[in-house]
Length: 154
Image 1: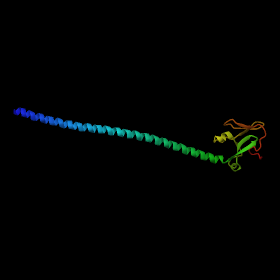
Image 2: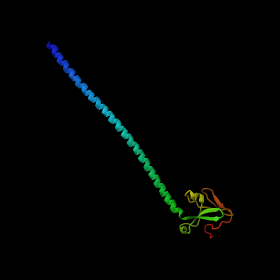
Image 3: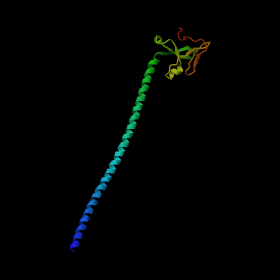
């Protein structure tokens, strides 16, 4: 009987140890569940952060592109102030360099088509009777007497 009591005590100790282990396993399981949930939230935050960084980079590129465009427009505005619309004949139009610009460059005409595209393309005099040709867009005017040719008074 002492043997049986000793075995019962030993069994109860083993049972108590097993219950403690089960209790610890339950706590460990909860800890693992909490760690998994935390890891999921962290992953979501990292994805949101990466997405935000991409958006910020795109906005910075857009800002830089807009700043470059504003700069181009300001430069064009300054250049275009050196020209005025001129009619060398009925129904003909060119952009003529203003006299105030003439010390920096000789009198000339610019193509209206190219000018509207914010490009100054100087019309070149060719042929007889003379006509003025834009070598950029291939437009031309003339073939008859033109009044106010560059360098010639009206």
